[in-house]
Image (cartoon, rainbow, N blue to C red):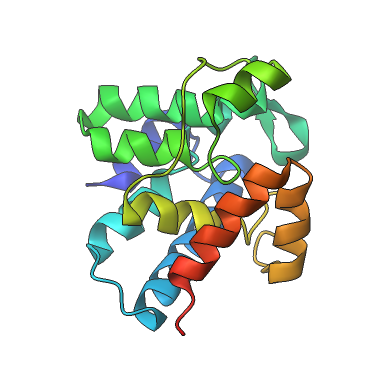
Length: 181
């Protein structure tokens, strides 16, 4: 998987948006691989790295001016957009699924319907170990503010709780999965 080739098709080299995306994605990839090593997970490290570098590929089509995104789509759709792009670019479902399933601690069809999110009414929950690992690592870094600053576990949990008890419960389950005993 050549993530730089894919990103170069959608992002202008040297742009503030590409720099932010690369910094964020590198932090997520590093966190995911560090967590995997500490938890002694049997994962495909190369896949995790490349998928982490591509998990936010769809942001350029979203409207989030605070992070240099000037598209027309609501930001909540960036995962769906990324999944569509990766299916087109590499026809590899495993990369597309990471894009679609990393938002929050995953999203259920019920949550999407109840909140009126502009997403298909279906579950977008991380299922594989790698999907969960990237979803989990992503929660510790933001594209707004300092993208290199790692959030504390308490701050991440408070953020997940804002989206409901189920969201926090899913995050906590991932935390327990990846925290060595």
